[in-house]
Length: 261
Image 1 (cartoon, helix red, strand yellow):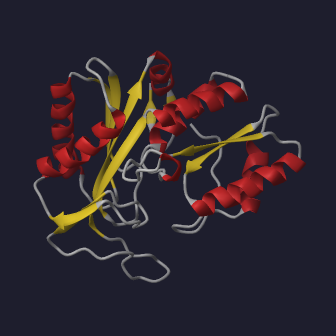
Image 2: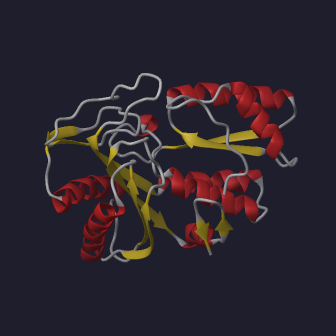
């Protein structure tokens, strides 16, 4: 997994200085890979930190997670729950003592094969303001909304769980273009307050859709992995794998929130 994490305020990028300190702390002489979601503030601050690290003779590479298919322009796509798979790939590659070039290549490959779509049912409230970060009626939902309340692709009346999942999976499939027999890993993620019972109802429908298409489900995770305070809603992420990416995903790891192998 990651060797270090620079932390900012709620819904804000960390400033360049703590990013640099984090890079110094984890650098073992072979360079450092920055991984984070594609948001303007993060890009600006991490780029500044990379320039500062270069002055301290620390080689830095950067891979942005861009898994949110709600945005049509691939270069502008946000990084959401797909970080789960890109971080795991990068951590596994580094743990295998691969070169910085190889770690970067593998993470880019993992990102290219990761596709997410979310649905929002109710907002969260920022601690600084104690006001909701967006508004939704009690019988409304928004497909494609970002984890910080960024606008989605469609807003409408609340539908059944199966209808919501079908809408989300259809949008993922349209971008992913999967073929029968391919292997995928699945993440059904709560955005904060959506309980496990509802997530497993969603996962049931996701698995039906994958089976109908003839896709092999290698692994599934259901739970709170990429949350937005108390926001109600969920996201679905599909990670398409070849042998190399499966090896990265299956490599053992152990931390407070995640264990594999």
